[in-house]
Image 1 (tube, rainbow, N blue to C red):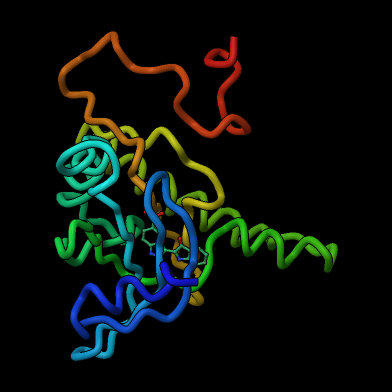
Image 2 (image 1 turned 45 degrees about the horizontal axis):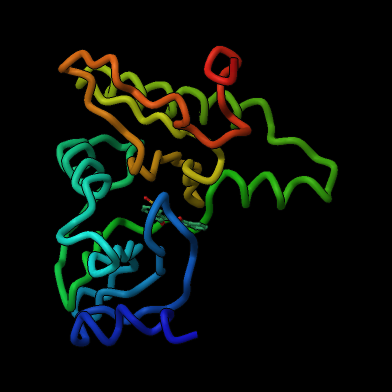
Length: 188
Ligand code: INR
């Protein structure tokens, strides 16, 4: 698939793209290696040459939300690179998400031990509390957006639908949040 090679071609040898790992709210995510530092990272590629001119507002919103968030349980944005009409967000890499973990456990019939559930929950709530104190709402928390490291550290990703609510607005769209995870009051 040609798109799998895109980061390699566009980033002039700085990154070696390994595989496609997912699709964010917009843009494709690749696992890649920063060649010089030999560090694994997640490259989120955003096309900016489609129909609109410039960088999509959703993307600017995501960057402005996440760039100031520094917390052990929020995925770190290392860098932003603009090359060949594409914007790349360079993130720290984590091997799996909570959806993968649940899918691994399901066929075994085992459940995530209670201690893990408690620990994941604590980490998630501490990340959320950190966001909310800075008046950032994520608005799309779901297993795909919760990354889980080998050592059991949980990190929230994909701030593509996040909003800063420091300026109260009546204009929040209701169609936010993946259908399955929408609260009843939003569905009604
Ligand atoms: C994995 C993803 C591992 N790591 C999916 C994934 C499956 C298995 O999306 C991911 C990311 C990662 C990821 O390691 N770092 C980031 C995703 C995103 C940001 S985002 C950073 O914002 O959801 O696209």
